[in-house]
Amino acid sequence: MTNTTRLRLTYICTDWVTTSVALVMFNLIRHMLKPETGNFAHYYMLPQVIGGQVLFPVMMLFIYWLSGYYNNPNERSRAQELLTTLGSALTGALVIFFLAVVNDLEFRRRVAIELVGILAILFFVFVYAGRSIITLSTVRHIHRRNRFKPVIMIGDDPESRNLAAKINGLPRGMGLKVVAFVNPEDNDPAKVCREHGSDTVIVSPHLARSGSMPSLLSMLMPADLAVLVSPGIYEFHTAAGRIGNVTGEPLVDITRPRLSESTANIKRVIDVAGASLALIILSPLLAALAIAVKRSSPGPVIYRQQRMGRRKREFTILKFRSMYADAEAASGPVLTQADDPRITSVGRFMRKYRLDELPQFWNVIRGEMSLVGPRPERRIFADQIAERVPVYSAIYQIRPGITSWGMVKYGYASTIDQMVERLRYDLIYLENISVATDLKILLHTVATVIGGRGK
Image 1 (cartoon, helix red, strand yellow):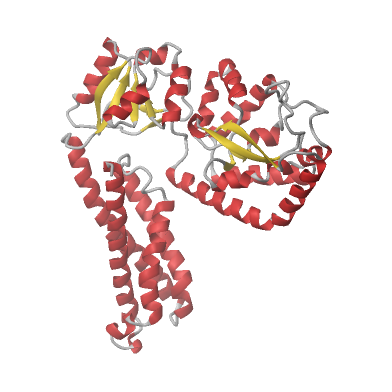
Image 2 (cartoon, rainbow, N blue to C red):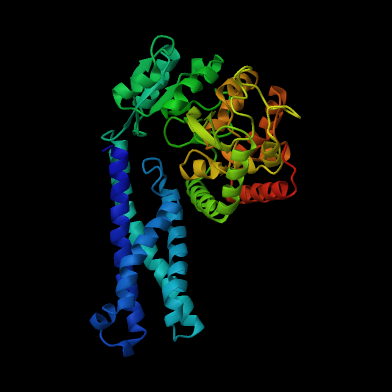
């Protein structure tokens, strides 16, 4: 078990205990406002009270997870911790009030509002106290260098050595320690990371300026490594940089999108819920399309193809087959053209309404795709785009999507030039990821499908 996993479990267990204590205190206060229910022991043994004491802490853990609190327990500021805990406390208090308290109220409106406030205060005080004890202990160990994350410096030159000396020699540790230097031309950085138990690399300032970042990212992203650079040096891509420590040597993580932890979790919940609901509701349509594809021409109903996913990991995308079987056997990989003779009559209808994409809801449930995200491409075309626009690698920070802003604004692309043009919208999307933006794109996609404006 890694230190990060152990710390995450510690926070989860502490949150469960402190939330349970807060609920006991709330029930005590609630009982005091309704003394006619008998003594507290009798009141506390009521089925609805026992049920709430068991179920509500579990529900609160889900709310805490949804807030993003457990995503990166080692990389959270105390100010962020305070605000996140406060928001979770208010959210949980309101949910519990409307689920359990409001139906049992014989109080005036003022008392009802006071109960919500009391519950929120209890959640915040107890949970924040437990979290603070763990966080302060963790920070103390980090500052004393008793706890650190081993990192690998990509590059072995005087500038790299100087940066490593700054990081390792700070008066107060920042949670990182450079444990090895590697020249990417001589050794595989991912292999060196595995040898040292590291999941983070720092790219030397020299390499960041040399123009070799696209090839480095192609090597590092599939290994699921965090890539840090010094701000102001790296000009390949700055859109998604995050500075995780403001008191130590400033380093920007260029492999994480500009996406809050809470938004990432909410987006994932919407993905799973939306995809599951779509597969259930559309099951008659899926069955009808499967029959139509099977009757249209010989070959499988579902077409499988390798696409580039998050962190440049290839995955198998699922689509209803819209072309004749082995359509690329003679030509090799080629983009679809207007009036493409390889497309079947049923396939042409499905593409017009984008119905061939429906099996990708299963890719979403499996975690390979999102409902909304950059369009995934085949490696051969992705490499050609990256050669012309190195910043293309930025899209691998998030899961690709069934639909995207580029698909809504531009549609399918039949040439590399068109794919590059469509890329503009995907890069803008990276700058503006939010639940609201996703909902807008989904609504526009539905309008496109209903209007038959697919290409």
